[in-house]
Length: 62
Image (cartoon, rainbow, N blue to C red):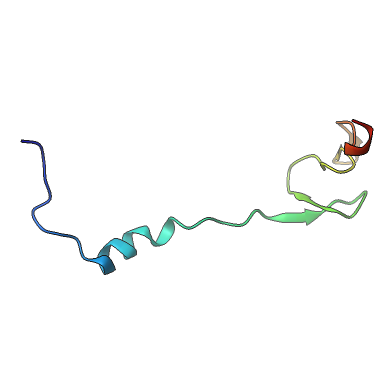
């Protein structure tokens, strides 16, 4: 036999353990070029700039 729990874990104790399993919303910041929301430390998906430089093609030109 494998290892089995000696007693049942109550719903309250189970919920306390899972309290940190919730999803976090992504932190969005305004792009300095186009003012649309983007993920921080990522290139803007709308205008394609990162730290003042053009790194990808904008969505409209792809």
